[in-house]
Image 1: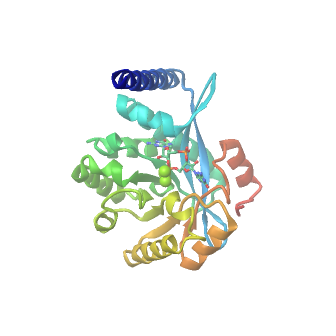
Image 2: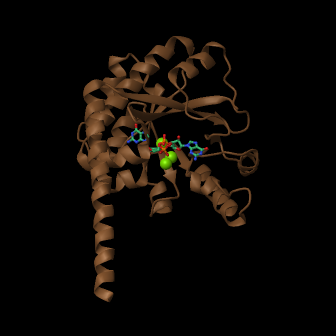
Image 3: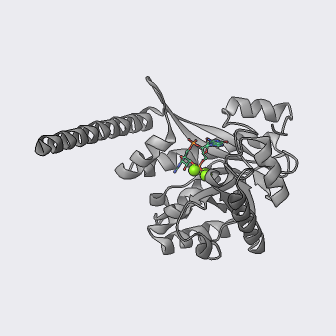
Length: 282
Ligand code: C2E
Ligand code: MG
Ligand code: MG
Ligand code: MG
């Protein structure tokens, strides 16, 4: 009796396992095809001044649509990381975004707004990361300050020394880094001081209950203050409600990003906003 039960359990798990690996294989095929056929695109989410709602920068977010509909980055980025496809995909994003920034340049006056690109762990380990980044900038005739890069603690951990070396070299050229998803990693506080990051982005998990949960609020308050002590700009991710926003304003957070202000937008939607000078969100 008990052995047949065990058999069932084993079958159940192996079936799960194989359908999961089939899906990963399918996603890998989609990634390869999207690379070959130039089928990726990028959306841009506003990052605003938390007091005024004024647009300060954009975050570039990769999108993949296949015939069955969109596949989320939450699904395809891990597959790209596991298969090594993240390197060509990451380079594609960097070049596509820099090309896009170039087309916005004429509309942006003397102080063009920066656009941030997410970098994956494998990219942070590249010996030639800085030449990749700088060539994307040169090829599109950008100012270095127009591009920013986002890294997570996890993306730095694989080879922390190489990662920091890359960051310092790129920063020397005027391209600034943000520490993404802060608060979800392990050694958060001790590393913060060591990392050459200009901004710290507080993870959405932190922000979610900030208006209702006293502990979350105290934690956020102390992290914001610590970041300010360390001369870093704070960005709250995933702001969805007025009440979260009110709390973050009170805590003195600098910048905000989230559906309350705006979802990630197509280039066309950003163009319209820029041309009609509607640069206050929501
Ligand atoms: P991330 O870099 O932390 O990006 C923020 C994610 O939060 C985005 O999800 C964005 O759409 C979502 N978001 C923004 N505001 C809200 C909100 O108010 N509520 C909720 N529920 N979500 C919000 P997305 O676009 O699905 O991307 C997920 C993750 O995939 C990103 O997290 C990033 O880690 C990764 N990713 C996206 N594009 C790239 C890329 O070009 N390269 C790399 N390496 N990773 C990328
Ligand atoms: Mg990010
Ligand atoms: Mg994030
Ligand atoms: Mg995230």
